[in-house]
Image (cartoon, rainbow, N blue to C red; front, side, top):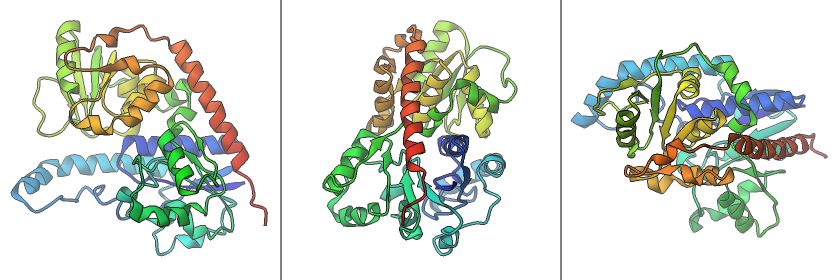
Length: 365
C-alpha cells in the first residue's frame, strides 16, 4: 500500500517531529510505502519562523533581538532533521493545492498530535482529510482534539468532517468520548498510544548523538515555567551533581548549563544520558519512560491546567506516584519497576500495531 500522513511534521517542536518519524517508520515496517505530506498550515506554523514577532511592543522587540540568532540556529537543525526523515524535501503543499496528491496514495492518515484542535489549526479541514473526498481509505492515528469538550458552535463542523473517516484512533479517553457524543455512537474509535511509543528503547537509541556532557547531571525540560527548576536546585544540592536546562527561557537566571538550540537527536541524547529528569512536558515524560530514567513530573504553576496528558500517560503505566512538588520530590528515588512498565507499553504497542494493520487497506468501492 502507498500511505501518506498529514501531521505537524514541519513544527519546531521535539515531540511533533519525533512522533512523525515514529509513525512513518512504523507504517513502513508493516510492509507499506509511506510519505509524510509536506503540508504547510499557516496557523500551525505562525510562530515557527525565526522572524516571527509576537507584537511590536518594546518588550517583544527586545526579546526578538535577543533570540533571533538562537532561533535561526534551531530552525536550521530542525530543517535538516525534517529533510532527512520527514519528507520536507517533497513538494510544498498548502490548502490551495493539497488536492493534487489524492490520486498518489491508497491510504491517508491524519495524526498524531492535536490535529483536530480548532484553536491550533484554525479549523483546517485538511487535517480531517477533507481533500480526499472520500475516494480513498481515510484513517486517524492517535489524533487529539486538545480539549475535553467541543463548544456547541463547532459541533456541526466536527460532525461533518468526521464523516470522512473510515477508521478512527484518538490519543486520549476524552477524545473517544467526544467521538461518541458527536456521532451519536454511530462511529467507533480506539485509544492508541502516542507514536513515540511505537519505537522501543533500542530503536530510539539508533538516533542518539555522541555524549554531550562528561559528568552526571540532572536534566530539566520545562515548557510551561513550572516549579521544575526549583525542584532541580534542591535535588542538585542534595545529590551534589550539576543541572542542565534544556530549552531554557532567556529570562531564566541560575548557575547551571543552559541549552537553547538542540536538534531532535540531541534532545533524545540529553534525556538518554541524564542521571535524573525533571519535566512538565508530555514528551519529556514519554522519553523518560522509554529510556527507563529516574524522573519526576511537575504539574504545578502554569502546567496544572495542561497536565491531563501527562496524568493519562502516568496512569497508563501505574506511575502516578512520580508527580512531584517543590516540597516533595523524594519519589525521584523510587525504584521503578521498568520490567512491568515496559511490558505494559509493549501490550499497548501491539494493540496499536493491530489497529494500523487492520485500518491500512484499500477502500472498497
